[in-house]
Length: 92
Length: 472
View 1: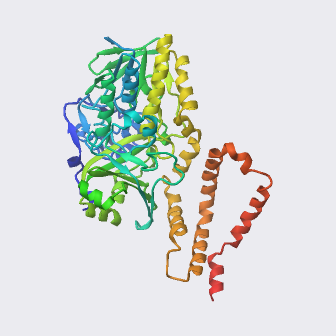
View 2 (view 1 turned 30 degrees about the horizontal axis):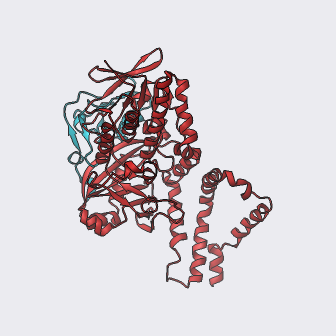
View 3 (view 1 turned 60 degrees about the horizontal axis):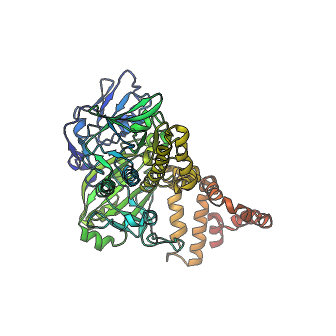
């Protein structure tokens, strides 16, 4: 079994219903790319010279907040999703 | 608006312990969990340390397999030394050593269990003691008056007032942020830990792993060292590093470990299947920063209490919870919730708890870990040097006398790289740990002997050239 092949989405569980909980202020972003590198779910993309968050991030984010923590200019805002929604670690 | 004596943000082991102790003291207590139940947002690295059984025997004796089916005692830990090519160059199997003084620490290193089972068990103890728990509810902010925290507000705008708020809300602590105690962590005070959970049939783990329920994969070749922990019907494998140290997606490094030939063999033997992907931030500090403000105390990960060597955080979370609630009860009795009063919390964890003792050598312990498992360059000599020194003699390639010369010469080859790190990391650590006995160790009558002896010993050690001449 080559672990690089597994579909990460298939081994994570998410409860729907949260509003937005991550955002980026592109005026503050210095394009250091650290968020792109650190997100294990690959939820940050660079499009036309701008960092954007994947549209389906609410169904994939594991809520580690690494993108928020690693962002030196403070462009990324992070709050936890609404109570009772978001990622569930059944074997946490 | 609802009024309480004490509000606790977070339903992990720290928050539940705080709620339990507060309720037992007769304080009107509420604690909050953003998940549908405690533990569903958390992931355990390992599990529980034996100190929990020593500190809270009556509580811990009730933690049994029927309540927590994932329990598995980590009696043996296998240390895999993996070289830069990804080959396992040595394995060292360890169990609690002769110098360990008490049960159950003599019987297991860790008691592994999933947080999704342990945290609800802890929370039940708190609610049974009379604390109120609200789940599926995110606490969004602190309510402040004249620079003093007076309560919290939830995501629906409901207010919960209390003279004392305990921040048990983990590494990404809203309480720490809004009370002004911390905005973000310094980059080398916080790590990211990605982790996979694998399913494996219980009876296979019982048979194949037996009591060997822990492993560390010490990695050379620029991969952070990884841990592997076995539970009732599965195992975790994960690794961590500082925020700025990831040059590629963190899963690249974790996948490298999982794809090692040796790891793949384990997966096959156990019939293991990937079951869950997890990631969390883990504070890893040389020394915690300020843990109190007007009306607020931080406990557990929110305070930066995971131990400075391997970042075990459950025991210090629960211990700090007890201390914080003791101080809260005194503050409530005196009607003084000021920073000046709550400073007593910091004094007690520093001077009267195992957290203080641990962090007394915190800068040295933290630095050792930073210099070795988290430093790829150093692991490239550490792994072959240790493998050579510990296991090189068990070999039939030459007469053993020749082997000893070969091994010593080979270890010596690494010394120029190794000595600066060993001296700068281990000398300060041992000096700190042994500081009370330094007088005896530094006895002037033995020092000159030692100082003279070292270069002599070094010169006696063979090197490769000399050996070749001799063998001709």
